[in-house]
Image 1 (cartoon, helix red, strand yellow):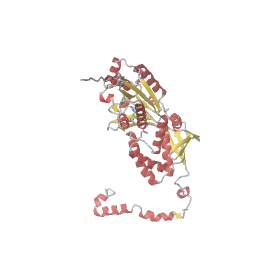
Image 2 (spheres, helix red, strand yellow):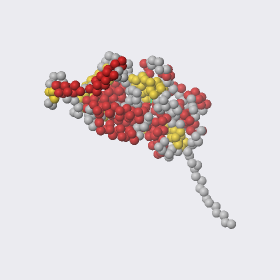
Image 3 (spheres, protein in one colour):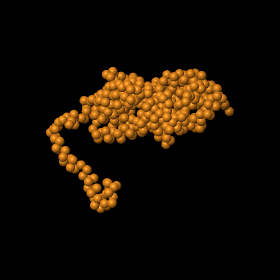
Image 4 (spheres, protein in one colour):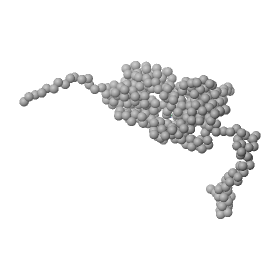
Length: 418
Ligand code: ARG
């Protein structure tokens, strides 16, 4: 019998690789060895996505990655995120009073990490979010469209903060005691959120020092003029600016006047209520200005219907589902309405408010002479022409109330047929 020996060349053993959303904080630092020990990965790649966090956060990420010996990438997504923030202005987007900074940033971050993971031929993709919050859902909504293994060690292993601290000490992980301050903060270009500590008690009045972007409102006032084109803000006081610069400038200007502080109870996607504090000076200023301009150029029926569209847009944005087909369809409506949202709005910063005090547009659906007290006839319509309308106005309500008066006088005494 003849034997055939096949020569099999020695190959490097296959290295299993995972991309991790990495901030350098406790959660994501702990995830690095856990992904190797518990999930069988040979290589972890840390990814930090720049959506306008402060410089210190990148330093923390660099230093921690270096101390861990972690391959670390920073992806700049600031422009893309700034554009999305301005898209949200076109939809007057807010969720329960919160202009959605964290929510809008998550799909941008998730896509950037996924792009890098695919480029690097990773097998898995991981985040350090807990199982209680919104971010896990927003990240995974993007990632689960890929073939990568999606891993959420903090949630899957039921980690607690104490456990993480103990584990980090045991493994001698580089967690700086100082980086976990009193508050838990999430900052990007559009908003800064402050949570945790005493703020978890909804009755606790926050100290002034939770705020970093906004000064306590003073007696000073300032007027600025914002120009919009097709719904998008394009200039401040006649200076044309790109989205990123425009937002940064307004954060600074409005922040000095204490504009854009929100202290609220927020209903998270899983149903939990959470007490949130936010600051978002540029967002508040732009949203107020944009809505003021829409008030001038859109018809009543457009405004009424758009409020419903805007609300739906905001709900989906909160859920991190900005790429859902529904949002695409809503965007088509929003875009159509924005074709006339071109003009300027004067904003007055006063007492912590950014109040629209003037608006102008060549598309105004407004006739000064028609609304004026000083003219009798407009386009051939006289005041007296409204008499017929006034006679009919409330006709059905009158009939209904009269019938109740007749048939059920005891109910009519309370007023109205309820
Ligand atoms: N509650 C907000 C949201 O879900 C912001 C939360 C910010 N904190 C955080 N750890 N991501 O959009």
